Amino acid sequence: MKKILLIIPSMAFAGGAEKLVDSLAGLLKNDYEVSIASFDPPGTNSYFQNAIPFYPLGDGPKLPLMLRAFTYQIAAQRLSTLKRDLRIEVAISVLWRADLINALSRGREKIVSLGVINILNNGTNAKMVKLRGLVGFVFRRFDKILAIAPEIATELSWLYKLNPNKIGIFKTFLPPPKALALLPDNRTRFVFCGRAVYEKNLDGLLSVFALFTTRNPGRQLVIIGDGPLLVNMRALAIKLGLTVGTQVSSDAQVLFVGSSPTPEAFMAGSIAFLLTSRHEGIPTVAMLAASLGLPILAADCQGGGMRILFNFPPDQPLSDFKSVVGSSAGVLLPIPESTLPDTIEVWVRAMEMADRNQAQREKWVKGAIKLAAERSPESVRQEWISTIESVRIS
Image 1 (cartoon, rainbow, N blue to C red):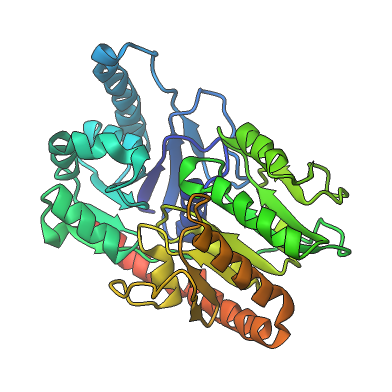
Image 2: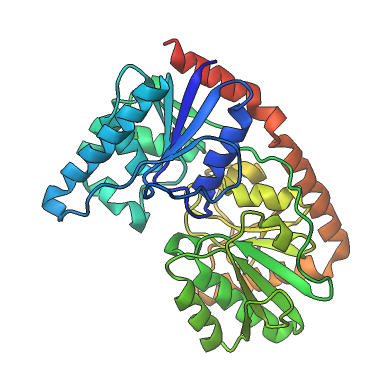
């Protein structure tokens, strides 16, 4: 059986890229011998419970910036050894650190990069713009670079002067959820799922909910996920006058439940799923929400992924902050920023529509279920196999 290796910086926590790797491994395991490698400390367990062989290779010594190249070389040597021992034919990496080490460790195998988020105007990826000569040199070593959305593909091609023939689009998917609901059904809830990082814009989300709940008491916001800004976001919620809890039985206005390998258990039964991100590709969690029949209220985030899901033209602007753009599965909104009150107001009105307009919500529910069906594993499996085979024999 042909051998595929998926590579990612870490599989120790839940995130969109990590879930993508987990789902892709599950999709391909019946057609290929699939393994996953990360740079977590040896002995680390994958956050996701599956039977896919997992190899945490370690991150190398923590060296000063001037010597950081040695850290990458050590990681690349470990990865090269693993590729050779497993007789890997195609190595697919996700996120820049994994891309760099995948390229440095290249042997006879083909290498593929999956681009899952935009680079330009994304503070987290600022160094990839500043050092675009080096990044472009690395990317040009790849046999194929697949982007999660056309806007990201165009950006990668232009920014790093890549051969257009090596650029492609990959289609995301999600297996159907299985977990039962964990939260009691005596609350009217909205739900958010994502890491507490700048890109996910929890500060904008909390500003929206603080205004919403003053007009609509008795509602609860469930936040699923962890991350480096989580403590700050809890403090912000309190500063905004919101009550905060962590237990599933809590009647607090904002419930921080932490990360979960089955976030659908906390999402099921919500009024709507809220995605306030500043930057996204096509978020896996939005497809998960759709599979649960949740209307999706989404920011028009940089990266263009939500426009793809909602079939909204990539070059068509939102008309203004006082109007929302409807989709069969939900609604596209401006990115909510506390410094732009109009963006907060339009989110509140959209949430009120999902909460109060039952006829509209039912239309969104039907649209969400249809969207999820279009992104099922069965609908994309053959596309992935064709892509891998075309790379493997090229």
